[in-house]
Length: 199
Ligand SMILES: Cc1cc2nc3c(=O)[nH]c(=O)nc-3n(C[C@H](O)[C@H](O)[C@H](O)COP(=O)(O)O)c2cc1C
Image 1 (cartoon, rainbow, N blue to C red):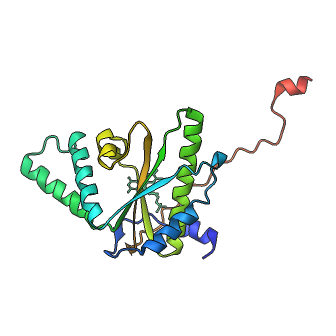
Image 2 (cartoon, rainbow, N blue to C red):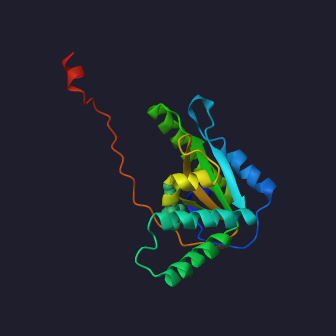
Image 3 (tube, protein in one colour):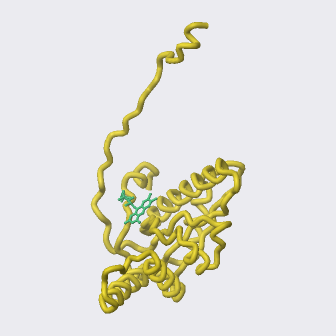
């Protein structure tokens, strides 16, 4: 597959077949992703993959977070239980949840650089996966900022930032493309610095 074709044809996948992706294929996807540009060659990305029984515990932590965030406010307990069971089943039906995280650099500029490269890493992973017939949904649900959730998965919220969770698996359905608007580029060919004119 050509790079340009993959960039244009990759879609965010919402429906997955209930089939696990081979571990060697997953490793290859993230190995390819690690060619993402990153300042000082810090390679700031880390991957924690929830799959098989791990998804159940992950889903429980997600539900606890939703409840803490007041997601169920206004609903009686029967309705809340039904909604939460629905979310748990929805999450369990997704074969892989790849949580992407990084260490927080105390220097804000370096933190931003690291986050930027982690996002490049994620997009590389999406494209590499797509080429292998594997779909991804890049998600940034509110629990990625929930300190109790972060502790629940064994990380330290003061030290670690969760950049997102990639839902992954073989696509059961590929959505139609969502066409992009033209990109407005301001080309500045003429001198615009009045001070330099005066010199
Ligand atoms: C940082 C980020 C977070 C996203 N979070 C979600 C999400 O929580 N739920 C979701 O359905 N899609 C999420 N998406 C996917 C976008 O909705 C998707 O990229 C967009 O609709 C365009 O569709 P396409 O990727 O198929 O071209 C996210 C994308 C990015 C880059």
